[in-house]
Image 1 (cartoon, rainbow, N blue to C red):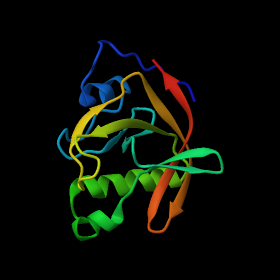
Image 2 (tube, rainbow, N blue to C red; image 1 turned 60 degrees about the vertical axis):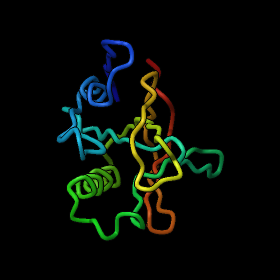
Image 3 (cartoon, rainbow, N blue to C red; image 1 turned 45 degrees about the vertical axis):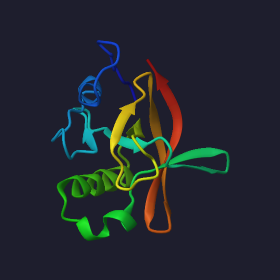
Image 4 (cartoon, rainbow, N blue to C red; image 1 turned 90 degrees about the vertical axis):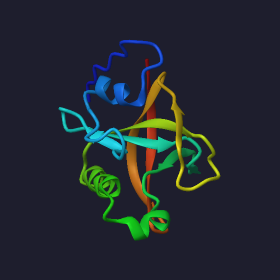
Length: 140
């Protein structure tokens, strides 16, 4: 798994970050992830939606209780396709995002950490949602 991600400017936008990962967003307003030209899956995750299980960190990648009545939304349909691709063995990466107010759902994007991305590992299901292990971190 070789990745040649070059951050070309300090403080890139989230859209630019996906471009630097060679995984441009399909739609800058509703896409929560993208597929790179190598077929890797890059997902936005919320930095506060983390679980520690057996000394490993997992980030929530679906939140079906919130979106159960909105499954036709293109962002949710895209996310579920991405999760299915990860479940079938695609490599995955996580860009950790901060919410303006993490207690409000649905969340509103505030910022993200452009200094690194998480490398996805095992995908597990907790109740109705999928969580993705952060195997390690790629620092820039």
